[in-house]
Image: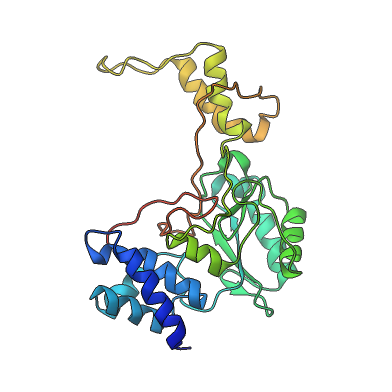
Length: 284
């Protein structure tokens, strides 16, 4: 469906704002693709032409980028993208079971949308949240330590139109169009991330403080890390499965952030979605 004249006028104004952020106009392509997606719910052929026209690119160049990143949808998407991580650790912890349960519960498969247009189901790759495995994401917001039962409850509530609160990130889950606009660089004021790294994430740093472990002198050539320091990282990585006895984080602890939103098998195209931090792509 072609972009309406009213929508095009609004998109042009927003696109000019995006383009002005970059010294080279073509660098604005990624957020602009999110922008047109926020209007249509996917990147349509008309959306591709819109970006090409404003950035003096060919439609082939724009389409090549739009088909590289899985956060850009080339067909209408549901109001909520429900992604189940089935990468190694999440799969071992139950991710495959969760995906199978949702397939049966919703009657759809990967990259398919329910008849009511509410939910698009996806298998997604690692969200850098292995310490909370298995992880479910709804429009790139975290639902940690998921189970088949909790995942089905989430999608049922979404389809009923209820407000759903993620484990970490924004105060509530917003629509796919709304999060696309945030990824385009227009914050909606909903983000309230606080401390993204919880007890499981910080287990290794807590142990290091307690035991006074220190890193080797970076100026010492060829110095190997002490075994106990390496062990701290191993403990941190395994804390999700058995770190329930982790002590509280001291007030002066270094607090790390989390990175998420990396869709299936490919690089992530967004920047700064509420509750997510995403990697910068190559210049188009």
